[in-house]
Length: 369
Image 1 (cartoon, rainbow, N blue to C red):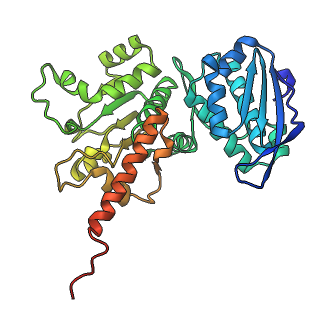
Image 2: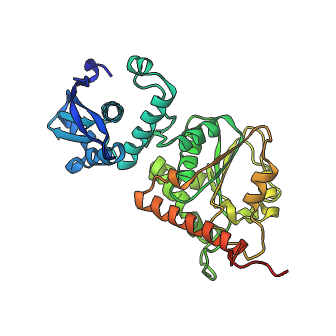
């Protein structure tokens, strides 16, 4: 980013040497100064009580001091240069969008900058600081929503290039949220006439009994996460009007049999709770000029014991089929909250430990002859 774009003083003069983490080594330390031309936008970049600055310090292992519209970053040359590019990227984002930044946005900028440094030499980065950048989804209400990590970037690209996309991964990775955003954008651009939302009605380990009301009232509790995403990307009055006119349709999975879904974006959420028969039935509903998005978390299957998940079977059976994309999110891709990421990681480690114990419950004991 050039000074004309609102940032000046991008130099990295050597200021001294500091102790390394390991005894006996000396680590080169540089100091980089940045001055933003708009105090208000600079405060958005730094965050409330400089929380974004502190977050970047922890992630990149640098020291950063913000004062007014001025910022000084100290640290190893590579880390200081990366921090500079992160702050410039965040400033460019608030300058064009004007909104506040979340810690997730900061993490996204860090990942973008890291990817940029891995793919392109420093000369190209200096000439074109926004290259490469993660893909984004734009809707009227939400504006541009950019991917926050490489997995989300691959997910958005897969949604744009494939008629059927499977997205697997733990909670908090943005599988459903981004799918709804993409579906809304297709609806607003006229690439689709309807948005059809479906989800298997399977309780998460508890029995809800009979629910009052008509079909939509009965299914609403299961589709609440999709509604939340819809209201994020669309005005409430547009969502309500779409539900009344049928542009947005709530279709219980059990009622999909026999239909051919044309000119529509069809989203199946919590697909890990579908049976093999249900998944095959759902996938064969795809009609002309339609897109299907199937999301789920194979680690949270609520089917009765012994019943195979339709999602797990489908991704294996359809592996390599042309026109089908598959994105697998990991625990490191969780964007909901740092604590959620750590919780998911802890459960992953525990489940792997249990599976190993199941395979060899007493490893020191020799088998009987």
